[in-house]
Length: 168
Image (cartoon, rainbow, N blue to C red; front, side):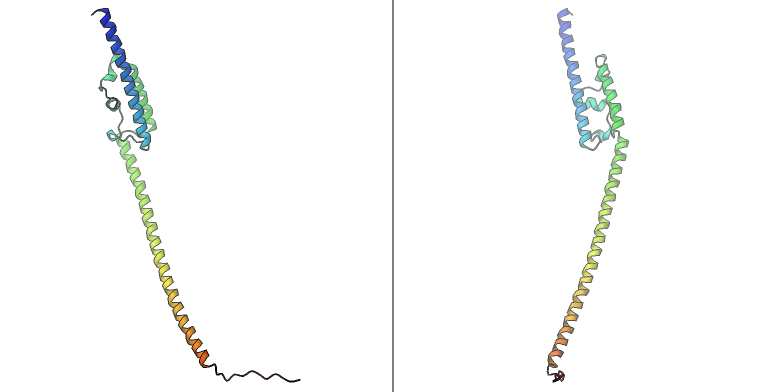
């Protein structure tokens, strides 16, 4: 190979290396954005994040990280994965546990709402029963009042007279 071809090949290789690094960093940013958007859980691959997942998301081969040119990028991805595992919920088992905890939380909230609804329904039934009692009492008292008024009008020709005033 002539020197001219070696230089061209090295330039293409350098361009490819830069492009791979750009793709991997973009994939890492997208993964972080998805984790933030899903309350700290990686929504794909069952919640598991690994070098293979980063490579898949970056659109590169999974053995690319192990080439001599990509050793620095490999180390960056390793550090990123370690910090990610300490900060976020990653890994299939942890994600399953987190989903189970969320389900339990929602189940508790649902049961609390259900109990509140039942109590409200019972309170409504008690209030309606008290209202019915009050209405029947009103009707009964109105009937008694009407009867007393009739009796009073019938006795208007009363035998009661006032005392005469004394003369001085």
